[in-house]
Amino acid sequence: MIKRFVPTKKGYKTRIYPNQEQKELINKTIGSCRWVYNYFLEKAKINGYESKTKYIKQLPQLKNEHVWLKEVDSIALQQAVRDLDQAFQNFFDGKQNYPQFKSKKHSRLSYRTQYFKRSSGTESIEIQNNKIKLPKLSWIEFNKHQEVKGNILNVTVSKEIDKYYISINLKDVIVTEVNYNQGEIGIDLGIKDFAITSDSEKIENPRHLQKYQDKLVRLQKKLARKEEGSNNWQKVKQKIVKLHRKIKNVRKDFLHKLSTRLVKENQLIAIENLNIKGMLKNSKLAKHIQDVSWSKFVNMLEYKGKWYNCIVEKVNNFFPSSQTCSECGKKNPKVKDLSVRNWVCKCGATHDRDLNASLNILKQAKKQLAD
Ligand SMILES: [Zn+2]
Image 1: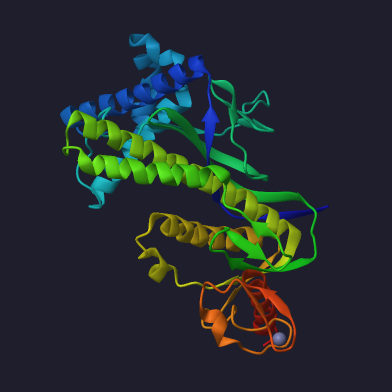
Image 2 (image 1 turned 90 degrees about the vertical axis):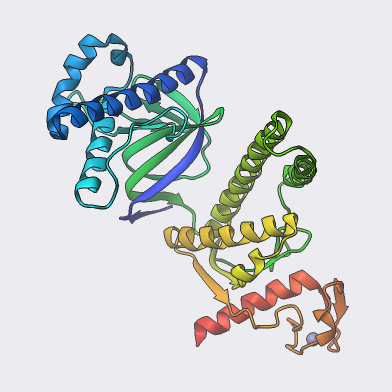
């Protein structure tokens, strides 16, 4: 067991599962923060902008006049004043236009609350296992896909359509309890599967992903048949938005779990340095999603590699990883054809296309590192 300390700031967004009562309170808090923001903006418009300190001092009085403000997180209300202050500072610095009123329809549905320790020793925000405690809300379950601990700076609670999320801002991130494995792997991006490793592990795409992607294609066709802007068009459009989000979340969850496991198991991960820009031009949906996944995955491996002391080495994309025999090093140009899944080298070695490629990627990475 090794404890490592990484002095860095880091954000971490994940879904939370509030109960009905908590949902109502979150909605109320978002609304109250918007109201406070607009209240002081109105004041500033009439009397000129004063200062955040002056406005924050007026909050207790405001709460007496509007008792419903007492129900919500008071730190979040203060943060609304700070946000307004920031908007004014940006305006004074010439970076932004004069602040605008926040509308329910057009502003982000969120509020932010700060971490602090009370003199009694209790904390405003706490995390235990997969639960987070927020002011006034008590414990809420959240989707935990990382084991990173650090000091919480603040938490933003947000609502997107009917789902709720938190973004935790951490400082002095501490990665703990890592069992370092001494593994080394090459990873080849698969065609049918997500990837294959030089340990012969075929990593499949999440089961639901294909189903959702097929559904998305069907809905997009359906949308094209509707009159743009009509009620039915809106309904289909809304479904597409939800499905996109679902796909994004399924994929993100999958990539997080996979990348965390691999950097923990290995001290060297070799990957292909694919030309992502060129790949993203591909218009086929499934292929496009695979490409986006790959670039996100590589990115996760790289930053998590730093936390867990795992070297992530990119192999030059001109290196013919599929066509080279991983046993004798001879090139076989016939393998260039993507339909060749298995082949036998002149040296007698039999190869699975992707496995052979991943073995070569690992070899090449070691060569690069030795140079
Ligand atoms: Zn060979």
